[in-house]
Length: 406
Image (cartoon, rainbow, N blue to C red):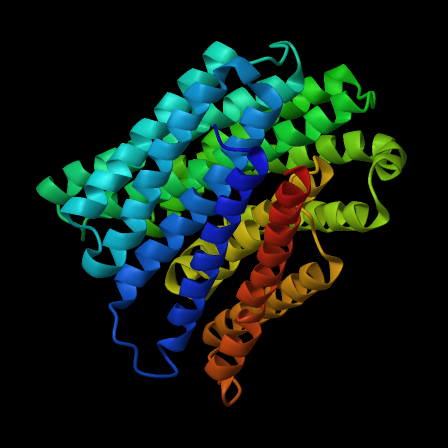
């Protein structure tokens, strides 16, 4: 068995590795790098999503929703998962998508199924609670997203990696990871926080919000397919999904608006402000998805990669990672030094501005300012620097506590 704090510390270390690989990617336009760009991209994305987010979320799920009698079983799942992640960390930079990286990524998927089975058999949460409903739905979306990676192998052997189906399989996976697994799990943690603190929420509004979120998540998948200029029917489904998501946001805002005072009393001022910023990013994310349902912008986004990168980083570095920080601090698993969090926020916000700025310049056929890439490297470097500060402070807290206990 491994303590929850050490599990999260391992996930935070993966985040640091992923962020450092992100800096290497930023350096490619600036200087000569003796590495294959696509291989580093694969490593960066896999370690970010599977190392940091997956390990953090599953550790929180175990800590809050799974009976402690299953600790040994969870430890086995946890360590098997770490072997697959380390295997990907070693193999992807050297070979990209090849035999060993495919083996380790496939074994990782098997570990996710194993974890879901463990959750279903050993949950200690009431199955009537909305915290459970959101967590269970998030894990179902996680399992469903794995159709993408399995399909990629078949598509590469039959149609090749230049086929539309190849990219669509990747987009299916990313969609149900970002908009399904990540978002629904974070919402589950939020509703668990409300239930734990006996903050009352109107049941009808939660039911409506929950159902609209599920339907919108399924239908907004078709936003990812608009780049191939599909039939009007696909456009219609994408628009309906976007509208449902906006309606779900309105319903969620009604829920939040009635309980924001109660929430503020249960959190420190710093955490409450951070949670408010997360909510702002959630709104911004949904607005961007709605805009992307408009045919003109759907085609524009498919042509300008900076808009896609900006959106993915907004969701990953902003919405998901900051929400994880809030919950990990609230449940006393991670300590968040205000200084390093502010450095992280400055690096995140400024780099997002720069990425969208470059996308805007490409759109309007304008020149970017001199030394743009060098400046982007320096600003982006603040994120791994902040993560080093958070990581070291938590290492000191954990190991100094152990010395006192001994």
